[in-house]
Length: 358
Image (cartoon, rainbow, N blue to C red; front, top):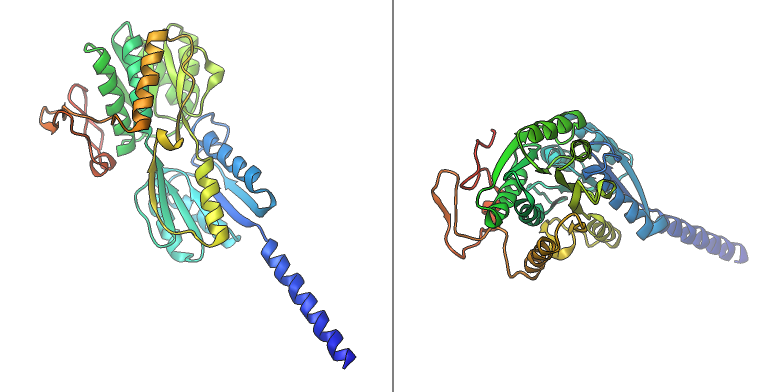
């Protein structure tokens, strides 16, 4: 009897220890990056958020990442390998990963996937994005107020709605404060290529631009502006303060950390559900970097007031009257754009020259 009791107690102790060990296993979270984590921009921002996730959850979480993963078939291989290696949650952080993420998610129904800046979802795949166009409105106001040549350059990456929205938002708000402003846009058809980004900035400067905005990932444009002198620009995705107080006079900062922490906790406690979120300045997912003293106090105050009005909901960055590029009416006076139109935006607003590439 004593022997049986001892065996039962030993079994219970072993079972308890086993359950404790299982309960203590960390959640494994994977990240797929389109560029290097030291690009100083987009990928740096995502990796900074990954590190914040580790700091917030400690030994309850294990993270892995792969950088420089091209958009396309090779990304499926990387995601598949992450899932096979035991990842419970995988964040894929570039628009071109959307269909590959959807494909891999279908093969691993017990793994949760989160795709950045896309629009497709499934039972085990969410999408998340930020309203970068709100930050572009503030940059446009500063750019239109500061240009002396009336020529503003814009280095565009890939012709998807997200990038087109940003161009339109910046132009609308530059035009409001400076009716004579002209945008010169160079499309690179890549998210990151420091040499091409630098060359684009130099070309825009040669064309008379004294303010340049970018929707590319590296700090190369700011380095080119710094070398040229008398040209100002903005940090993209990360603060890029090393180029302040000029040429970097402010920035759009992507703060993914709260979202990554929230969604990882949801996996831990079993509450994760597929969703599609699109957050902006009001939630902190889009941050506006400090406006430096290279900008006059009046312009700085106006930009901050614009930011406050967006946060409060009193103002929408796309408010009519606005026409499309061909002059056809789009938004009536006081009317604001709906999210569906913004999400699928592939047209320029009236006043922008050139065509949106296919």
